[in-house]
Length: 404
Image (cartoon, rainbow, N blue to C red; front, side):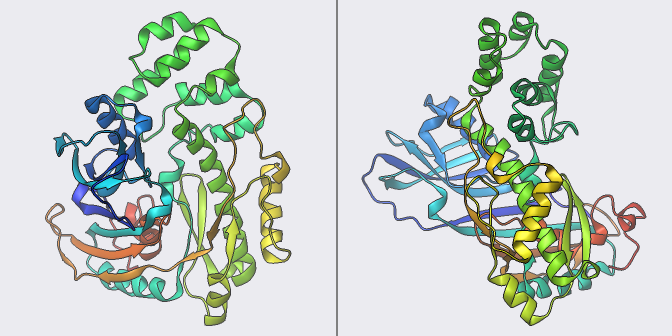
């Protein structure tokens, strides 16, 4: 099975509660993009408009390898409709405040699953109906873990250990599998020339990485201060990634304790393995539906019982304590509190009928339409409904001939 063969195969439309008018300090726009991350789209718009990236605000981050529509605010004078490679910008009106996650109500998805074997469609449709009824574990998925660098672990883990040089070296010098070729080449140069700041500065293109290296030319031992020069939203994502991993581990252990390890199956992902249940009783679903799990942070509190035990076991496995989830040497970069429902229930879920796949002759394709609340991942649903067909599974390696 394959997804995201074309940007149109993974369509995401942001649902938000907005009331634009004719006045306000900020312009509100609909941003359509393909083949760009939200960060990359904002950087390109900043360059084209001649305005700082801080003047542009989005409520959420949308997939890079997709066709997405989301809302964006821009401080200052109105921007006319704009079309460039990979993005379009359409004015919607004016608002008094920048776009934040508080305005988001969810996302609507249309996902095409391709390269399916003949018998797969019926099982996928049945599982889709089941997950709408009994819910899915509300895990953070791959998109949250793009900062896992070259198999060398979480940047945030280095920061917690006070190793700012190691964290900075991963940021600048370790390529991610999601990096474009030119970015990978720049990261290799950073690793090769590490410590030779003058040479490295001259070899890098203009941008944030070059600014960080410029600082190190003058202050070669001040790695904590250099790390603070990283674009703030990106640096904060490094912390979110590790925090999300810990949260996933806690939820997996909760499910194991509540449903029994034998009722679960595991699906590999970038940071390890995610545990799913295939079926759960009404009482178990009702209990889990009410469960909200705090994000690991200094002031997080976990209720005694199954949740408290799962959290304690997760933290012990990572050799970290809640009180230690505070970075020394930096003021603004910290783990933020919050909470997340244990389960997510897809809305308006429809599985289309199988059709011949126009990209893979002799195979089939199927479209799934559904909506999810903010922060939930469509790819988690795909992992559930098509787990035997995911890249790397035994059925996938055999060409998907096994019946799901």
